[in-house]
Image (cartoon, rainbow, N blue to C red):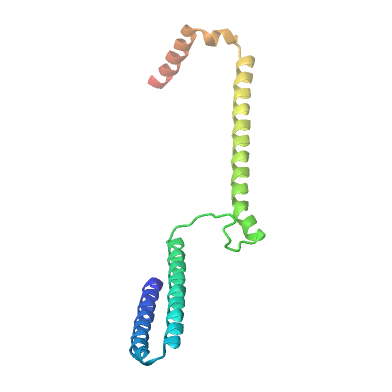
Length: 148
């Protein structure tokens, strides 16, 4: 919506400029040579200024095209507080991921310790669990009660 308004405003300004230029050109034939040269120089300056503002408008529209980018030191006037506010969520994310990793490692160590404790306090020696026949015995033993 803003782009349409900007374009219509630019069209109106261009139309006004063309009308003004045509009126000035029509009366320029009657002016002395030194005044016409000063007017020509003023027109060149005005056209040069107009091209600069058009270029600036085009870059402004190109940068506000609906995409977001984190730009450091691009002269947008970000204060230190704004930069800290941009980095703080990243630091919180990294700290959270490290905490989750530590928690999962602790849980895994605790589970392995429980399994080791169960193996060492069991009536059977640990070498029995490594025997293939014992593993088959355990599998058939677990299947038999469920069939009854």
